[in-house]
Image 1 (tube, rainbow, N blue to C red):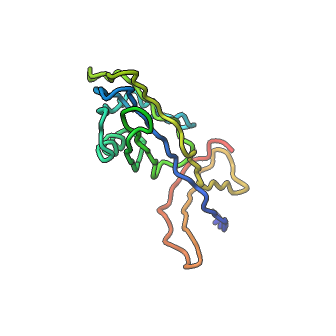
Image 2: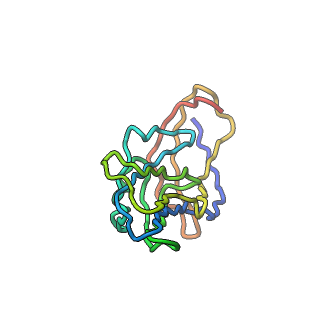
Image 3: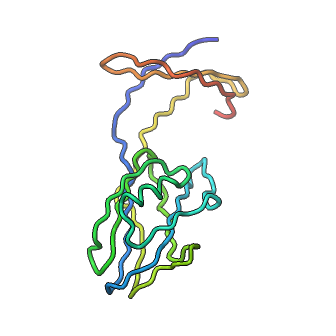
Length: 178
């Protein structure tokens, strides 16, 4: 068994995904609720439809939306701010994905939640847009000389101008593909 050590330059540059949910009505008669769901469509995607969506009341506070969104599987931590809609009546919620890095799929919205209180109002509009595309600065390293089917162990330790931090626990895995 050999030990391979490599020093890798890491630059910051990651950016948190920011999405904006907007709910508006042409008159001051907005009522009801909508649902929000999250689905990861990446290479290790999971069907979150089986986990279920969260129901959001039309005038949900930013704090309540944080609680609801963080209850969704694999969403992670979020920060939310709420403002009055720029046009008409209603609100915009700016959702920042704090620890789920990368370019994420848009939140899924549904105007007719299973709870039975669909959105109501004059010319109701519900949308979500990507305001800031997320950037993942995850580092991947593949050492030379690996053999398929062999079992390898790895530990990592960050190092900077202050020195080396403690090493991680050892993780072992069989190499499935190169």
